[in-house]
Amino acid sequence: MSNVLTFEQLPNAVTMLTKEVSELKSLLIQKQAESPTKEAEKLLTIKEASEFLKLTVPTIYIRVSRNELPYMKQGKRLYFSSTEVMENTNNSPLHKRQNKDNDFESQLKTIFHYLQEHIATASMVSVETGIPQKNICRYKRDLEKMGRLWEIKKKYCKETGFKAWYLTTNPLNAPFDNQTKLF
Picture: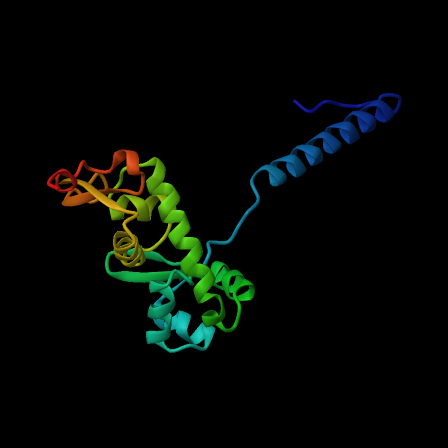
């Protein structure tokens, strides 16, 4: 069953083997480049994240509510990606209060412009813009006081399934007011 090589056939056999080995090597390199082996990323609990960041647990909750820390939620528990938390803390300023006014203005503008083109509930705006819903409720109140936001209709929200007001900042979509014709 074994092939017997003569001395004259040996150089051709070595050349063929060398070529096949180099082809196998290039295939292995290509395969490794296509699917790099990556360790599963470590998810931190809130307690581990507080130890990792050297912050108290209540401070972590505050930063999560302000959308300052990236997190994942499973059930009622919060989890944090160690690499995302590191990247986020490296890019964020030490004194968050310095950017508070800028964040307020940019979020207000984002909501205003989104509602110019869409009629949506606060939950829908939150999903589309990434702004926390509690912030949207504050901005909604401020825009209503300025006369720049209108509640169009109350019907089931596409995001939550509960009844909610659909909002707009576009005057063309504002509901008609019979009060102005009384005088």
